[in-house]
Amino acid sequence: MSMSSKDEKNLAQVLDKIAELADPDRSTMQQVHDVIMAAAPGLKPRIWYGMPAYARSASTPALLTLRKDERLNLAITEKAAFRAAGGADGGLMPAAWYFETVDAATEKRITEIVRSVVD
Image (cartoon, rainbow, N blue to C red; front, side, top):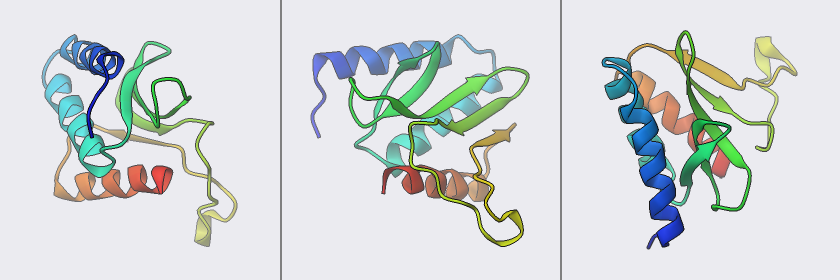
């Protein structure tokens, strides 16, 4: 899939935002960015409310965000289609996951989360 110059500019802004972080947060956030892009190559990265975010196009609302507050987190925005968790969580809808490091199991779960938003 080719990128427009706007998409390229937006990607550069996301990568610059990630680069502002100190390690180990920077390398962890870069790893999560890479997992998101591999899980859903059609998503367009861009800055949304000052955070790295991912949307279907440069002009549609972000579906996912990456944040660094006290902790790193991946969040589904209110613009995504939510599904109740079911089971013990009943009608609760999970929307944010905090992480410090990313191992193979975490990468797999992030991939599942991203695909649940775009599929």
